[in-house]
Image (cartoon, rainbow, N blue to C red; front, side, top):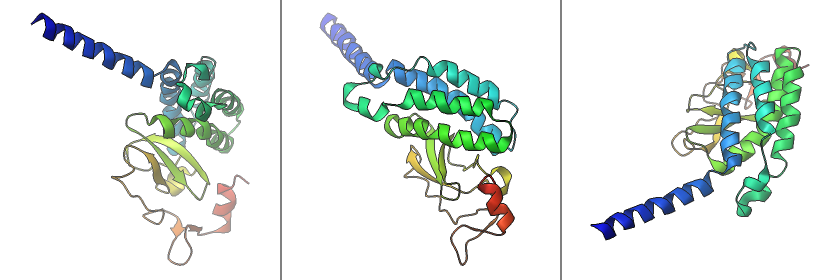
Length: 200
C-alpha cells in the first residue's frame, strides 16, 4: 500500500511539473489578455464599442507583465516581439476615436495574439481568418462572428487554427450576408460597401 501511494504521489508530481512547463507565466498572462480581448471581439462583432477602451486598458496593464524569458526555450523564438506588439496595438485601440479606427487597431492587435494562440492552442479558442478584411481574430466556438464588418458580413471567415479546425469546415462562400459569390469569390455588392470595409 505504501509503495503504491508513493508511486501515485510521484506520478502526480511529475504530471504537475509537465503541466507547469506547458503553462508558463507568459501563457497565463496571455490567457488573461485573451479574456479581455474576447470582450472586445464581441463588442465589435455586435457593432458596439462601449467596453472597448476599458478592455484595451486592461490588456495594456497585463501586457506589462509579459516576459518571453518565461517561455520554454524550444519555442521562445516564436513568441519574440509579442509583448511589444500587444502594447503598441492596444494603445492604438485605446486612442481610437470611432468604431472603424477600433476595428483597424483590433486587426493589428489580433496578429500577435493569434500568433501565440496558433502555438499554444488555448482550450475552446479558434483563430479565424477573413480574406475580405483581410485579417484574423480569435473567438470562442465555431459560429463565425466577424468583428471587422459586424452585422453587414457577420459570417464571413473560416477557422484556420484551434480545437474546431478539423470539425468545422466553414467555407468563405458559405453564407456571407452581402457577398455575391456566384461569379467572383467574395465580391462586394457595391463600391460603397467596399470603401467602407477598407476604412475609407
